[in-house]
Image (tube, rainbow over all chains, first blue to last red; front, side):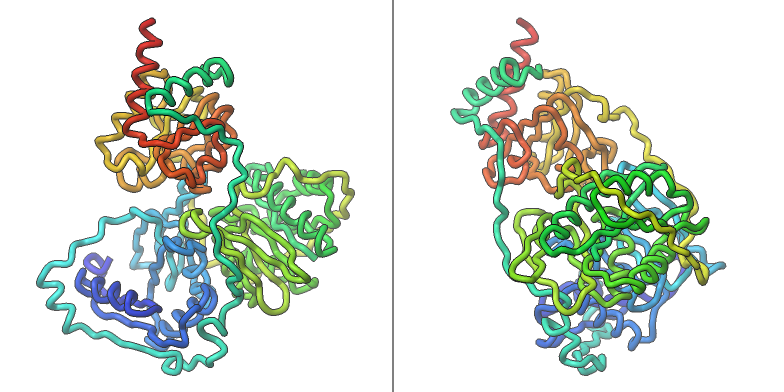
Length: 217
Length: 325
């Protein structure tokens, strides 16, 4: 988008050293500058508190035209942070985005959303807007050696909760909207009949059962 | 008051709506809260009539020409005015592309906790415990909501049994006066169905599906060979499509095709809930996976816990021999 329409790409993340690594590698891949929200007080933040802090940082930074987030994370996968940021910022948003076309004349975007059952929806959004991007929309670029070297000279802001003017009770565990009570391996209420034996024996037993018992082949 | 936000499409209630009602009825039983089903749209009379027969207390019809199509701006605006007029305890929405598009905005606007993708619920003392899946359904996280209600939750499709919804109610149907202000920031331009190509799996009697357990694209030949030997079609889980081993039209699951064949063989598929909702109504499900803890075994009828690279060729050979016999 920058190559086509100009502008600047900033990357922002809230977290510890792992977030800093992601920001540095984003700079090496071509982003112009980075903002790292780093503070022990951010620890154990939930989606609500994280989205509030990130939105605050974007406002402090002077706003943006477009904010890109993922649909959901690999770990907690709640799928809420990006959309919550849109609400905190008061911007338009679209989730599960698989295609984006910028319309510079009208300061708007056309985006394709992926809905259930293989349906794609095209919507128009006024800018500024938040998009949550579906996995696989683009191929990430490799960070070249030159990119890695150049990244070291790029602007890298580090902001704490105090820098954002956030009170202690608005960040981290204190600012979260829920508590994690327990994390556990789910119980399986299973009806499965496990077929044992060597692979050949198990395969033969399975075919027998599919023919005689389930009668599906 | 427990609010269930009904989801509908083409003048039909979507399956998630019954699942949300079951979720709501369970919470209502334990907490003694009444249930209101909310339906937003431009012509909701028939659907409100259907909701009314469920064992709930009230149906709210928010009807307006501007609600003909789903839009997060109008949905949040209307739901906010509905919830502000009442004492909401819990607001239930679908963990669907629609529910997840507006639930986070609604929760932030009303400053309440949102637990997304709930699969279970329990009451402990006077507190509400909502369980959600994390790490791609490998682990469960039990959460305790904080502060005063309203609390917000989205339910994973397939997690609550929609066919157990209790009927026999005669809920009051109330038309909620809708006033829409401002211009929505989102405009819906069109909806198109992705081409199904040669792989319309919805009517296939036998499907052999492969997952990430196949390790690389070339190994998918094992799936094609087994499918051919057994006379079935080929399907895939989302990671296979994301890795571009196969085109998207092969994908089975919530963002792909929903299938219900006579026989579904899942090979090297761990069974994320998004996959399970797309195939769990199959008449006979076979899972082949070396991880005995894989969630796919929860829905399977027959399982082989072993190396797929040994089991699948053995199966293919038996079916080939059977065909020649």
